[in-house]
Image (cartoon, rainbow, N blue to C red):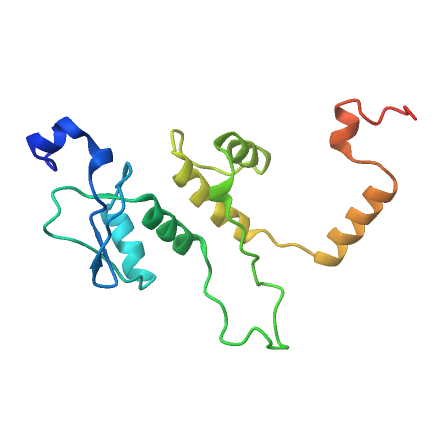
Length: 171
């Protein structure tokens, strides 16, 4: 059917297959999910120097959910400086926020709110990856943001609450 499985595996389905990766010189023995080890993922593994490679004797390219999460986390994490105690830290440090944990509808709302241009029909991972690039590019003046947040909380003037009718002078 897809060129990766034998007739015997077709009757069992991809859920009975074992992960095709070798992790630290040992073949993974977890059940493979529906994620495949594509060229793009292989490039990420190489760039991030993960100790993963595909087992050439495997008759498929499906990986387990455990390795899928490792690769996704490696893709979103930013390399840290050698010393985090460095007193010369700049304001350009970007917090590590994992947009992959958000739902598709939330990602679409983020995209619409910030008017991020992206081609239509992206899947969740592609959309999160695109929005992650945008999120890292946003410049934030922390002092102003925190001051405005405290003011908003003290005056009970959350625009979202007013919009939904929660704060309409009802005491």
